[in-house]
Length: 182
Length: 127
Image (cartoon, rainbow over all chains, first blue to last red; front, side, top):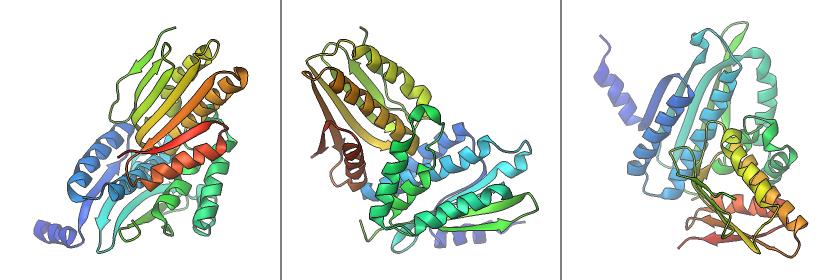
């Protein structure tokens, strides 16, 4: 059988606070948020860090969920992974989900754009997008999510796209929440 | 007109819009599944209130978290208040943006709205 103890130790050593794999539905999103809220409360004394981690996680999950809204019937492609990890100087919010290859370029260019911006530029860009369209005209944050994540993290967003087949790839995202700058 | 009173939940804020006192409050968390569905009644209420507003209208935001989808709705609430002020120049419109001590992200969010909206928005750090 699987060596559970080894598995447990590995997660313990890496200080993985939360690990989830499965389909992200909206009701699950609520449960995960409650769980994390509770876990972070115990783990993080500093409420500022907790809020940052929580907000970033929230936008990450909503990003994934938004992708799913216009996706597959085959549930296999709706499986995602979510992790919160702690290291010496930072928390990490890590997510991974499948997406359609044809949507990659748009997302990649957005990530490149956001990663090349200074905090001041991110602030202006956020306000520009926020001010541009009325709330009634869209369901999600209309692309505010990544900008918000970048602003709150204050670090470059790590990402990768792994090719799965001719239709799909796996999109991984890692967001750092440093403890030092807080 | 009737007041709006909504208790807060894990994903949605406490809302109290009082037509008699002109005090409007949104507090707690705003991370609803569908932000438009949640905020639409508040927009409609403000449209009616705007017809005959009180001498003084005070909007208080006392939020712990809000997602980016809600930020659009918050901006739209503020836009309605901006309209109210344009329509009734003699009436007072105040906005209070509360944030927890040291919560720079929430303070900055308040600053973002302040720079986009032509209203007296006071950023208040809670002690």
